[in-house]
Image (cartoon, rainbow, N blue to C red):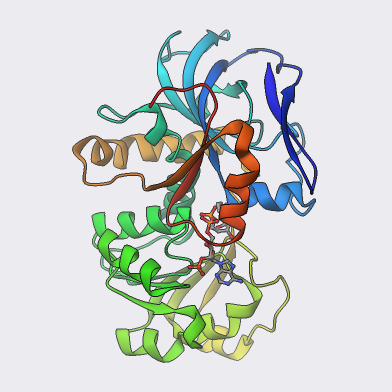
Length: 323
Ligand SMILES: NC(=O)c1ccc[n+]([C@@H]2O[C@H](COP(=O)([O-])OP(=O)(O)OC[C@H]3O[C@@H](n4cnc5c(N)ncnc54)[C@H](OP(=O)(O)O)[C@@H]3O)[C@@H](O)[C@H]2O)c1
């Protein structure tokens, strides 16, 4: 098969050894589309190694067709169109994945749209509702609102009646966030978001992919009993925590990474998506937001686009798929 070989300077689409399997409880997929994630850029730069046992090839999510089924798999059939959450290996013609990390393509969506679902909806669901434990009506602050994760999280907040405030890097991105259901927003290039979020009513939960550079301001806008869920380090990894504020406001700081969860835990998250999110995708209440696509052989152009913060929603690579 072909796969992307990467180093910090180059992405090359070339012959590669196909993964072994499927073993017990695994399926083999012929990949149609692969999603691009910020993590892929970090991995090729050597800053985000794959977890033990995972493929060293880039790619955390795909859509495609089941071509072989391992022993013990139920509920999936050869020829079925599916999408999958991976620990790695998606930039390739074939992947082998634990069946618990596979979901059917929602009725009415194509393989193209389906590739935009697993990583961002699983991340948003895990951190809003499982780690962040949102209670009815609680208010959410989403940083990087126009990112892949942000555009999924805004829609989940809207669908589950949580007012949400976003930060993003341009007026056009803030407008896109509003159209998806955000209540209010702040351009991060206009200075601190603190006064604007406070005036809005503060946040009971913050989904934060920025980390160090936002820690102090996040603590200032986090309401009593609020949860700050840190999912990324785009603004650095070391900062000072105000323990006085933490104690007095009973704030909690939670670190979270989807990729390192074992298949059983990923399966629980995907099962929640199947129950709570898939019907809303079928009805059209929720929709993946695809920004741009490239053929996989042009993956470098796709990475450049993401690196320049140019995307609103998901960037996809066409591997072998029809729409
Ligand atoms: N822990 C997990 O399980 C997990 C899972 C998935 C993703 N993530 C993290 O979530 C974030 C979003 O991922 P994605 O793939 O959806 O990203 P993406 O689509 O590439 O969007 C990232 C956006 O973040 C904003 N940004 C970049 N540098 C920033 C900085 N220094 N400070 C504030 N904002 C900055 C930019 O938007 P603006 O122009 O609007 O500022 C950029 O377009 C990443 O940090 C990723 O690592 C974590």
